[in-house]
Every structure is written in C-alpha cells, then in structure tokens.
Image 1: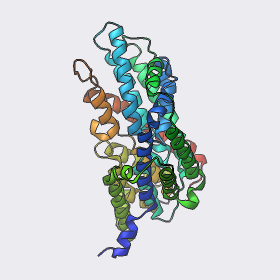
Image 2 (image 1 turned 135 degrees about the horizontal axis):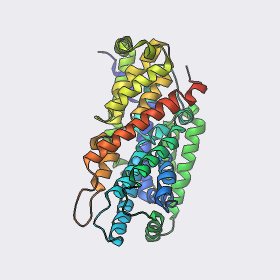
Image 3 (image 1 turned 180 degrees about the vertical axis):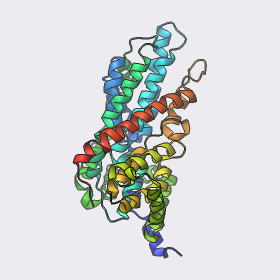
Image 4 (image 1 turned 135 degrees about the vertical axis):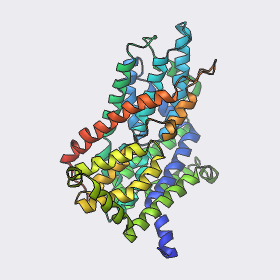
Length: 407
C-alpha cells in the first residue's frame, strides 16, 4: 500500500536500471568479439620491468576499469600474469616466489577495485547512487561524475603499486621480469584485429563520448540502448547474446532503486538519517566534509562484508537525506558513499575481483594456493587505509573543495 501499481513500475523503470542492462550487454559484445583481450594486451605492453608494472600498468588498468568491466579485465590479465610467473620461477630454477605472485596479482586486483569511482560505468553501485540522488531532484550526468571521481583513480593506483613495490623489493627472488615479452607472444596467438573488433571499438568510443557530452540531455540509458541497436544492425550482438547476460543483476539494481524511491517518498530515509546525524560528533555532522568522511568510513568497512551494490542500496538512501538535514551537498555525501563502496579489499568474498584472483592464484603443477585469505586480509587492510587516506585527503578535503556541486 506504500505505492500504487503504476508507482511501483515507475520506481523500477529508472534510467540507471536501463544503463546497467546496457553496460552488461555491451560487455557481452566486447567479450564476444575478443576486444577485451586486445585491450588487456595493450595495457600490458609497457610492463617491461617490475617498476614499470607497478607505476605505469597499475594506473592504466585502473582508469580502464573505470569504463570497462573490471571483472573481464582481471579474468583475462590474471591468467597471463600466472603464465609469466610460472615461466619465471621455472627459468630461475626455484619452486616459487611468493612475493612476486602476491605483488603481481594483488596490484592488478586492487588497481581494478579502485577504478570504481572513475565513472558511472564502473559498476551498478554507481548507477544506484545516481538513481538515489535523482530521487531528491538532482540530475547528475556522466560527465559530472567523471570530473568528481576520475582524478582519484590513477593517484590511488600509483599509491597501491608503490606500496606493493616497496613491500616486495627486498623479498623478491626474481629481480627482473618482462611481462611485455610474454604478452607479445600471446598477441601473436590471437592474431590481427578482426573487422568485428574494429566495429565494436568504434561503437564503444562513440558511446563513451555520448555519455560524457550528452548524458544531461539523453540520460545514460539512452546512449547505451542506441549503441546496442547499432551493434545489432552491424551483426555483432544478437538477442541470444543479450539473453545470456546476468539478468539477476539488472533486477537486483532495479529493486534497489525502487527501495530507494520508497524510502525517499515516505520519509523513512529522513527519519533514519536524522537519527544517524544526531549521533555523530558535532565536527562531523556540521560540515559537508565531515559528514562525507563519516559516511565513507561506514560504507568502506561494510562493503568488505557484503556486495558493493547491496552496500550502496542500504546506505545510499540514508546518506543522501543525511546531507539535506545537515545542510551539506547531497551529491558530495552520495559520491563519498559510492566511492567507498569500491574499497572491498580485505576479504575474498568482498567483490568478484578478489574471488577471481584467489581462484586463479594456484600453481599449475602442484595445485598449491599461492595467494591465501591471509594475504588478502593483511595487504587488503593496508590498501584500505591507503584508499581512505586518499579519499579523505586528496578528494574530500582536496580538489573537491574547489569544485561546485549540483543543488
């Protein structure tokens, strides 16, 4: 009885939900043509040494993960890293080099995790936050999100790369590593780019341009639907391919958006938010920066124990009205919540990225698990601290202080 049937349907049919559906379908097209492997090879080309892999590859893959599927990137690049690692230890005449495999795979993993704040296309959690902010009358475009979030991504990835390089430098048994050489061999196996790959690449670039330039007019769902229609006309993506996407994810985010609408319309979110704000220390509740830090801390801890989308769906509808009560920018507090939901670094269950890396980090010959849950816990804790320090110091108390937010 909270909403009439038309209201329920309207709550589900958000632009953000169409956007999520479109992103999943685009990912299917990219994977079908093999363009994801091509992009992975392109990213790995500069990795001619351990230093270059930490300081150049990490920010490159993080920025790429802001716009493409981070899971697909990891699923392609991690096996190449394992192949390079296994070849290196065998050539070096040693059984294993724990520091090397941890440094390689966790740098990749955490760089992809930290690509989340870069754009709305990085994950459903971002689309949920855009929908929640929209429930309070604020329309946040794709380009605006990129302005607020993308500067965080390469800086965070470089800091993570530097952390793993400094940690592993004295522990490495293999001191030199040329990933690019192995990548060139892999590239030769794949062969030259096909016509379908070129078509998909052109459509993908055009889609990102449309999101960046015209999402304030056409939303984010409109351009991606147009891109899917073009791919269908070009004979690349058929309905049977679209049928195979993870529809449960689409409906999960639709339900989250509908819950957010219900909480906003009934005032339940305001009631919960008012209780939370009242419990905060004065220095946090009376400033936009303080409230953003408080909410991001809560989100960043919680996202390690549940999915990022579920975390934003639970906290977002409360965080945004919290800002209204405290007289802060709802966009600033909402983005802080969404950004921190990418910090699922400590537990294997925190994000599919962690699970993929954990599953692939096994010795091909002995079956030994090379990266353990303890490695995730220890290194994830330090990367989580680095992530919070950068979100608070570089973003919230840094360049955001010179940026205007929609009201």
